Image (tube, rainbow, N blue to C red; front, side):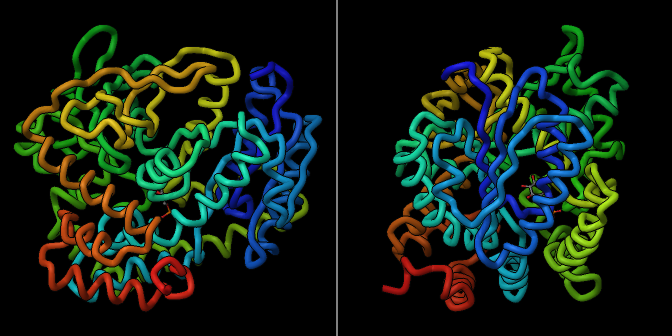
Length: 437
Ligand code: G6P
């Protein structure tokens, strides 16, 4: 890659999260000179896209930056000659997410955006679209990097790795959020900490935490067990059992609650679905407030209200990665990449989430080898579910989809797997052409 100023293409640019990304760009202009940002969205998102465009122009002007801002429905124009393509779109919008959350609940199964059957449905809708985007990237910006935030991020990145030639790295804000929360617990700066992360997206453990050369894993687990804040805005803060954490010996991510405390999380979800609404239904209201704020012509920065969302630090995760690639920093980041033997018990072509060294050539994972039997079973089963889901999404194969759900640890029974799958196919009919032939 040449060291000329960068063009960023942001697919799903009309997202309410975009001001956070813009803030991240403006913060780093001395290290990462961006010359153009092209936001792109679909027709249904045009109004939001225009609001984001206007806010971005005000933010850029306030910062005194010289960046060309474009916003359009023309994906190919956005992608052409981009250096980085950032994907952060949601097929079917928040209504589709609300359906993903409500359908499993009807069957007494966790209804969540990215894990369990909700994440499965989202993957089925998303994978064909992202592979289509990849065709444009292969043609119009073959040297670019795709940084994928689109959920379920690990699974979607795996589909891109397997079915396209696009250079891609999947990203998530969970590992960086874990680091920030551990720094707060330990009363230290995040950069003083080293976490050895490995697992899958939204199923990642920090197997070891280090501070100043000292292994602090047990201390962190004790603090989390004693109730230190260790959750995300979008996840119920179900307290952890200290004895379980001690036995586990690795620091789980906030999403592990769905797998380790399924009954309690299901009860929370059911209660909230009857009262304040599912997470998507709550987010719809927050989004409305955000977009009202974004239209205020005196607003020229990311408003505080955006912190009500679960995606904190997402722009740090992505812009730090751009920095590492562009400036060939060879620094450590937690990313979603091809396993290639990093976790010995998973297939080489599986995408995993792990600590990796990142430079101009991409991301090289730090070797893990054998994982403890305490986590091998869960990770293996979820990876099998993910691989079956990718195949179902790409080929529209009912059998693969059914086996994916039957292998998901959050689906306790094959009759439920079948009913949920049929319900997903019916509700998402218009978004799943691959199953309708
Ligand atoms: C977390 C996850 C993201 C997810 C977000 C949802 O940050 O890591 O993958 O998209 O939460 O937040 P929301 O505010 O939309 O519920």
